[in-house]
Image (cartoon, rainbow, N blue to C red; front, side, top):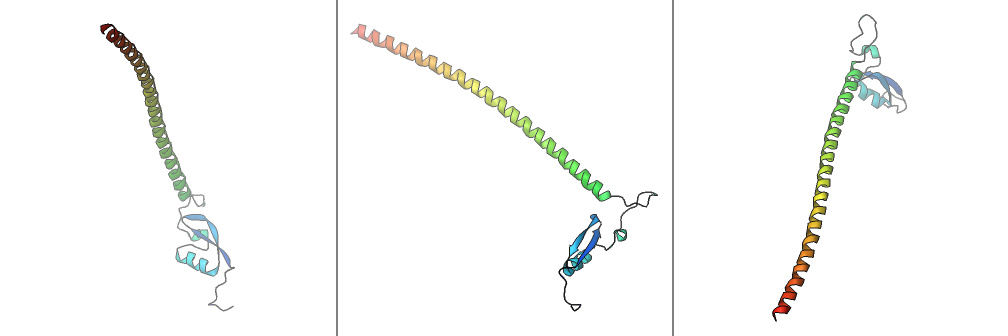
Length: 130
């Protein structure tokens, strides 16, 4: 295989500030693209802060990501609370409207009964008048 031919089966680890735990890239082309994008062949080549005096690499990106997810979760919970409150208010309004409708139906039934009674009385009065 010449230098110009790409090996699609080559596999190499690469590390990046956004992915300090690293990942495997497969194929010479993918590895070359990763290198161009700033991926390194060793985690110590990354520009990450070290924990004070321990020599261990901190995980600030993971902490930032975790905090971001916690913030998103808190926002989602706030949105859920707002929607729940709105639904509860809407349910209360629907219940109130249903009760008003029942009262209006009862009033309509009472008026219909009164109209029938008055119609009968009018018919009887008209009959007497003839």
